[in-house]
Image (cartoon, rainbow, N blue to C red; front, side, top):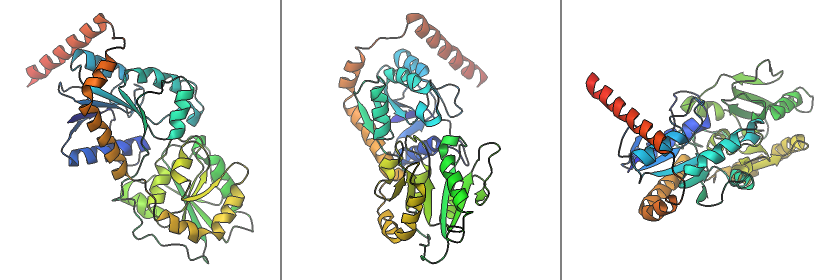
Length: 354
């Protein structure tokens, strides 16, 4: 099977979508599938749209380009749309509608949480051929090995990490913890380390800041701590708390968005009014959650297997899927003509240069 994944891979510290693509590609290639990240080949069996917005740095192609490819190049190519974004995450007002429109060309849609799926269904997306596949991190990097549990006597070390510096990433919570560290009740009980980028002009007063890290360096830094904190607001899924959990750190998490689905049984939740009491609770009950986190089930292998299973099932049901697709509206003849012509010119240019 040849699969095109619509992500421009970035090396080094980057967002969760980039890690998703890297992990999935590794799994698919190890199982003898061919993976590309463009629409240049004429023999693609399935296209995975990960970021249809042309303005995004991570976007390898848009839904418009996918639609033209399917109709002008290979009309039995199947299309899956992975949705891991929403307006609610960053207080925007245009993302959801754009994704709903882009989704119309998809044969199947994968959401990264039930919360996100329900959000889009409530805003007008049709509830057909929709699936939730929970995310996971690379368990060859993010693993419990070499993590040292808290002894209950020394300072409890809390950590979080983010590539993005938007306020909704949890900075209201992180500011609150930083303030607690300055109080007599907590200053000898807690430490907090923030790994990653900070909002402009934002500074911690009592916390440690580490530059953005990735891979083994990030895992090693996470494992220097005892509890993982996420205050991210309306997070569709988030890779950060998954990486922390896979490293053996019980979770302290804001009950918001899809985060709860990943964290419910593996830590202590809080809301805007109960953060301090949640901190007190995990101080007293750390061992209980340290035991639970050993069974944390979400990792990249499980996630990638579920994607591969979906792709193979779609291929085996291709005739039915294509029949359903035939009922939808096609793009205009003129647009297809221009697209076909541009591909011919590009191929001619490539052949001439070589």
